[in-house]
Length: 98
Image 1 (cartoon, rainbow, N blue to C red):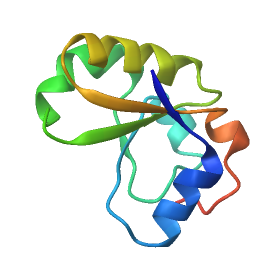
Image 2 (tube, rainbow, N blue to C red):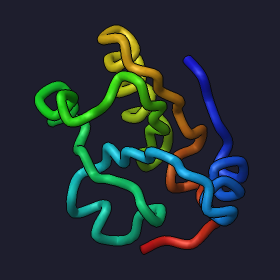
Image 3 (cartoon, rainbow, N blue to C red):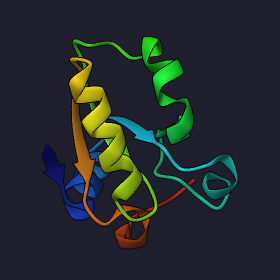
């Protein structure tokens, strides 16, 4: 599984580069703040909403600590998607949130 550090992702976001960020935390967790531009698809809904994702695009998966996003990555990779897990999750994120 490919991985990215929170600092690497923060640089991408701050430079305004396009990034498809999927936050797999529950809705109430995301209400406390998410990475700007991230789309919330709770882990339990990933299987049902994966048709919303484009297999030609790359996605960065985020959760609270990196565990749930890792599981999402494993599942989506098995379905032919290009995904990267953000190490440490939002606990390690020091950048802006919305």
